[in-house]
Length: 477
Ligand SMILES: Nc1ncnc2c1ncn2[C@@H]1O[C@H](COP(=O)(O)OP(=O)(O)OP(=O)(O)O)[C@@H](O)[C@H]1O
Ligand SMILES: [Mg+2]
Image (cartoon, rainbow, N blue to C red; front, top):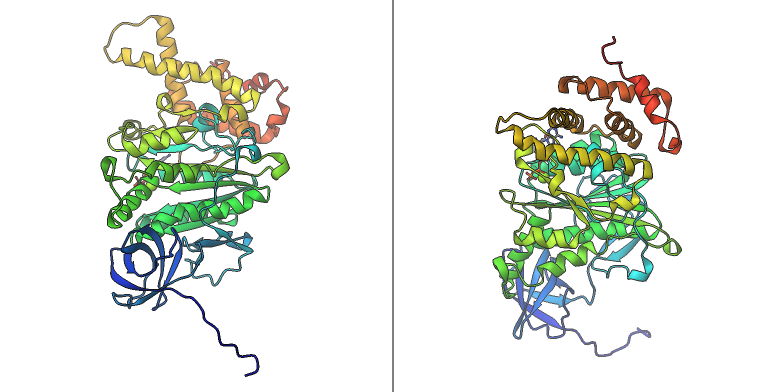
């Protein structure tokens, strides 16, 4: 009793005006700030996202069955954060950091704000180290560097998710921590992705952030930011991280839905005017930090869906202009059996070449030129016209190369292998080979490489002579 003090305490209390579609309208909280957490009397949580003159609109983050009009709402004075730390590895969480896999509670190392500003330019470094994907086509012709933002773009069901999962699986033993963000996907797709990651042992270094299709729109909106925040914590500790946003088309649609419900003015295609800012704010956080700031990196691979191969629509063009390059997956290539269906003519990596090993870069340059020439020349063969022998030979070489570039799912290849097959191709060792014989030859190269134990550190080694020894001599046995 002696310690009891009587005093006045200022508190604001609002009333819920309406609830529905994942948002709530609240009256009577005049000092609410943008993106402030709001607690409702039934324990539900919301995040303010529209401050109107008479009422404020909040997106719901959790919603109990009891939340209804007339209930009280309180300001918390807090911003939304997510728990971060090593305990997250191997776990599946929702965007609020709650476990989603039934493996018990999580012990976080600390809490980080979900929406933090991107590192300023003076804290950054140039992208100079490669991030190997294990894919023949990407590691040679569209290389990705640690700290780069590379878009995976294509129509629906052309293997975007499969490619992203392959890349995560290939990070095993490369000292890269991965965060896979699944936004608005069906439960079955989520389970499939998780199953693949588990089966390949990728969960040891991976966190999965899930906001399923049935989740509240507020959660779907926050999922990419949560994933980015989790990785950012490791980046600041000097680690290399990879974040995959699967996919940002759904994210943009969710944001449009929320914005329209919250009566924010619509712009082009009914998206709010700040949709570009939303994605650039997110992707600017991917970077390579300077050595004096730990030297960590955050590589981002956003996925975006196109309709009928049209790259020039609103959200895809926005993302193409934000990122440092794109890997374009083509529906027609996919249908013709060329998988992964990467269209080299429409894919580009603007900065990844700087991170490529000089030997790989040199070999890939020669090979890419031949491949692009082949794609141009092959069109002529459709007219059935008679071709010169030099042209015919180029086309034959190209057909072999196309066969070489095919790759099954979950068959990651080390970078030494890329150099070995490119050497074989560039030196003309595959010229006389029939396309059907390519898989067997590639197996011989892989076996030879495993036996010889060659790595890129042996870059002065005479690769050409060594690879020639592994291949059968033309006309021989
Ligand atoms: N390299 C590959 N080799 C063989 N099959 C593949 C390959 N890549 C993808 N596929 C198959 O293609 C189908 C579609 O792949 P996936 O789900 O990854 O596409 P998506 O672009 O992510 O589709 P969505 O638009 O539905 O997200 C899957 O059945 C997958 O097994
Ligand atoms: Mg997919």
